[in-house]
Image (spheres, rainbow, N blue to C red):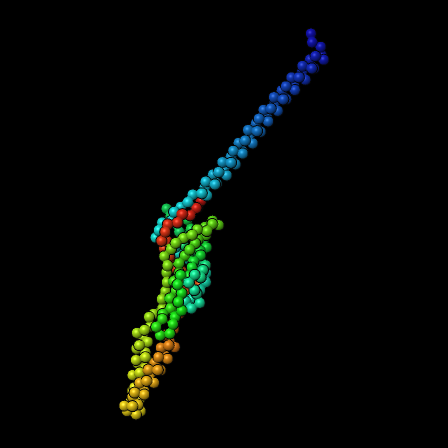
Length: 225
């Protein structure tokens, strides 16, 4: 028969063996859990990366609606000047919002001409050059829109002619033939001065004006999807 000491030794060895086995199982389980968690996190990161890396192409001809941040005038703006605006209506492609409302837009003045006296009408023309989406700037090409002042050549001719006729009438009443010639010259001069004073009309596009441009080239913008 085995002695009590021997039995105690065997029991101790058995206890140690069982404890080590359980510890190993616990360690393997923890490692498995950590591995699963790491894999899940990696999969989540990759999923997010792929989710944000889907470009959507906005086709040529798409309308881009904006609202101006500042006033632009033909007598103060110059070709090449930049201006700021924001998207007033979201751009949607196949049910997905590609450019959200409020996105920042950068434009450029392509033509600005101050109104001259008598014959030179004012002009002002704009285009868009980029839009910001998701913290990234995308170059865009759009149609230009512009405004031109009225061509007042005909009005000036009528104004000057009318002044001459009125002067001739006044001169004729005052002194006959010679007076009519003098009156005509004076009247023409007065008519010219009046046309010069009233013919200079510059163009102003005030802040918060809503304008619409169209893409002349398609543009791809990365969106979540």
